[in-house]
Amino acid sequence: MKVAIVAGTRPEVIKQAPVLAALQERKGFEPIWISTEQQSSLNSQTLQVMGVAPDVVMEPPSPDRSLGGRFAEVMDRLDRAFGQLEPDFVLVQGDTSTTAAGAMAAFARRIPIGHVEAGLRTFDLDRPFPEEGWRCVVGQLSSLHFAPTQAAAANLVRAGVNPGKVHVTGNTGIDSVRLTGDRVRPEPLTNGLRRVIVTVHRRENWDGALDRILSALVMLRDHVPDIEIVFVAHANPMLRERVFAYLGQQSRIRIIGPLDYLSFISFLKSATLVLSDSGGVQEEAPVFGVPVLVLRQSTERMEAVEAGVARLVGVERDTVLQTATRLLLNEDERQQMVRAVSPFGDGYAARRIVDILQSTPVAQREVVQTRAAV
Image 1 (cartoon, helix red, strand yellow):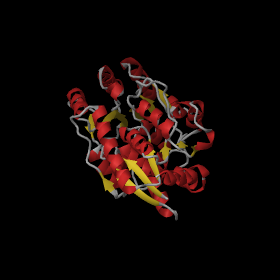
Image 2 (cartoon, one colour; image 1 turned 60 degrees about the vertical axis):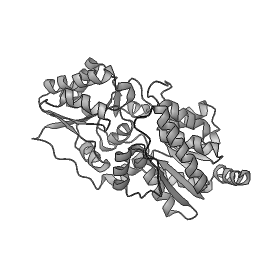
Image 3 (spheres, one colour; image 1 turned 90 degrees about the vertical axis):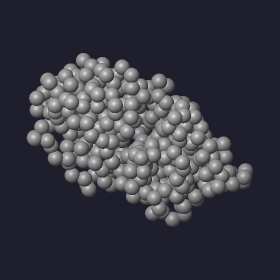
Image 4 (cartoon, one colour; image 1 turned 30 degrees about the vertical axis):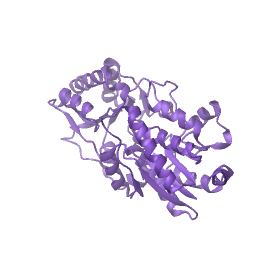
């Protein structure tokens, strides 16, 4: 079976690399990695770190075009790539523009689709935007749904997906943590200060929410004298400019990044607390016993909140400040969240995905039907 793996962003590379490795180890598969270069520099950096050599590297989408324009570019290039490569199966991951474009291009060519990290939902198309819309579309087009948790699987079944096509595998991001975590030492602390890691990049937080979060960080620094706040800046130039303008001259607040995957894991392992709107961080931090405050009004990863290793705090300054301050000044309360457990799997999701591709009648039957139609 010729399996095209489509990826173009840092998270996609991190979460598809274990699937590639599992396919390469198994007889009967010919994996082909297609890089859309959606996040050109971050994507290339992460490919190198994860040891992935793409078979096809597309031109990156034009930065001066709209979200829809960039989506159309990626879909058109993937359509041409699928036409040339003629894969039997296409694997997409998550909820990026690359994910949706890959699924739509494959669907248009009647190529069966497998969705890695399927079923995540906030049930609010504005949060996160456009990711919630993209993953809903992919959920309608996919032949196989690889859900990270039972809750994600239940979301798909409630949406009308045939339960026989839904498989709970765990999250492949935990596979990458398992495979790389032992290689990485915690980043040394600065002058013995406890470290608070912060990441903010979601579109819904670009406007007033970002200013409220940045204000809360300065006040948090003033309330807790023995912490260093490390803000891992996103590559987006608009976000970086605003972060540096607000925090650039603040004592005990350091702006770094963007970091490669292993460097970020190193900082994460050294953290006392994480504040983030990132989905991946909600998955990774609990593996190392690091509590997470989720800087969003809703999350598609409620499993971490329900497990007690994350709290959904929103983006209002006072709420963020009060919650973080309380955890940093009350060690007993913080320790209640310090449990090195992962509600997102055991680190063997990729192996299960390949088992399903190899054995499920759905995958084999749809490949045969597709070939017959062509």
